[in-house]
Image (cartoon, rainbow, N blue to C red; front, side, top):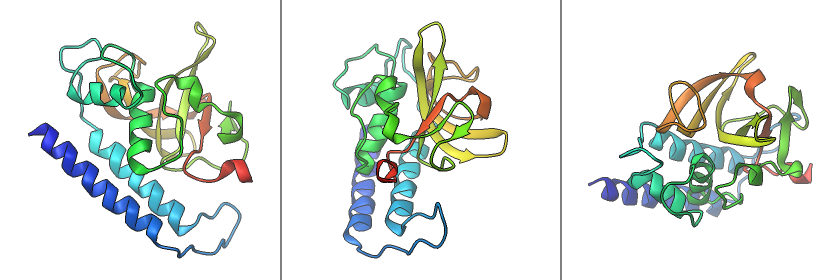
Length: 197
């Protein structure tokens, strides 16, 4: 039953994304930071995908379960690996976004894609469908990633995999969370064309 629902979700997203890309209409830029109709629709498609996964939980713990293993397989990893980046990659792949196919968080920290870092906007304000990363000083690298759903003044709303109620990077499912902006090390944009700006 769960696999049937996943297949139906793939088919729905495929048709949505194909209809987006078959349209040549792009809205004019009306102000700095405005986005095209195509980008807005792609962001909506990414959001529909990650929202559809909220509530997924590991089965048996230890980074396992049908959905978790599906995310890991999308980046050619087997069961048992940390999967926050694999979740991001799976969503982007299914929405048709050109992004790293990787289960390694630093893969998403490409300098030309970063739009926000350590409290400073580099290119523009983060938007729905961008990815945030959290730096772990003990590891000396970004080690947790998820989607920005809403960027507020002090708080951001996120959807992230392999986390839990406590916000850790080794959790048990896909959650919608509220995080302080100061927790965010960087935000990257793979949906828009930030490397051309």
